[in-house]
Length: 129
Image (cartoon, rainbow, N blue to C red; front, top):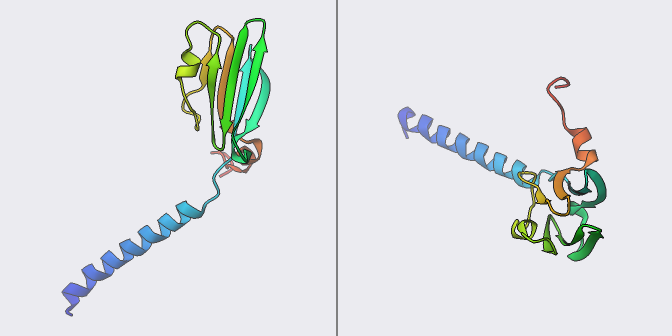
């Protein structure tokens, strides 16, 4: 093998090693916990840590404005039924990240996913580093 062949081969091997190391780090890092906070009229009425849900379950939230049935599974949450007229909250389906909340306007209900307080405290901000 000549010197002209060795350098490109070493570069390819270095890239492969770096890709393998990156994949291993991403695969083995601890995923942050996600908490589903359920608000009615801006007040948190229930919190569910989705990273600690052992098996699926349902519960119903009701008040004078109406009733919503919520289904919780490990890592995700949704509204499965509601007695509101438009059912937009039911059509929203499952959420498993904080990209968009589930909102039921007739019942003034919002389900928003947020980081658990422990994970938020561990994260560094722009000031500290």
